[in-house]
Image: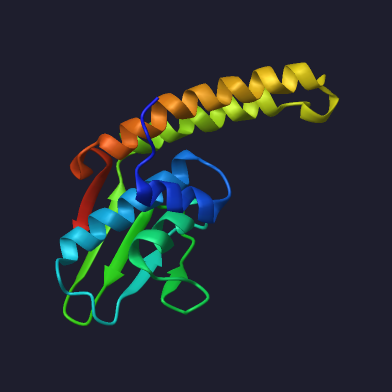
Length: 155
């Protein structure tokens, strides 16, 4: 198993568990920060979906809802607008990336059905199946080039 990069370990600690969307939020934040370059004064973020991605965005950009520097505008897209005093960038997850994350969600939906009625051994088996998929999927996101996961909407 590949060692979790430090930034993603911090995201998972903040989020409380590993998941594709917190990972992809981190990827969005990293890509947006790179696009802004050194222009980080007065950083503000707007994300278009209330999801697990918010923890990844907060960890990678330093913006937060509590500080008023991260605003959620729920329009169903997975798009991040990051604005500094000098410039702005908007990027969003690609359809292919969302499809990959969605496969994990479908697996969880199937395996978690009737969870409370399952024997402890079956819960352990199902949790191991979900963890195995994360062990395969998350490193793909960590190691992917930004352009494989996100697309720039505007600058």
